[in-house]
Amino acid sequence: MDTRQQAQMLLQIQQLEFTAVELNLFLDTHPDDQQALALYNQVHQQLMQCVQNYEQYYGPLLSYGFSPARQNTWVWAETPWPWEIKY
Image (cartoon, rainbow, N blue to C red):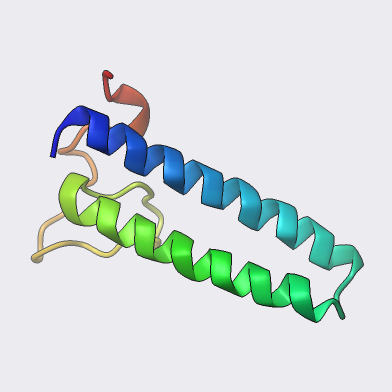
């Protein structure tokens, strides 16, 4: 995949993260809203799938126990970090 595809994947992850945070904040004040809860769960599932797809091609986005090691190797420090990618 090229850097344009990588940038598109990162943008989609950022959009889903923003949506998840906003829904999280809404649910803090409206915990019984079933529609918001269902939407949050849907966004969360999409976000996890997007992160998994990104990490499959480009390596981990996060450390600290959020991203599994691939093929028994620690690639966190070997790949460019998201903010180091040149578009």
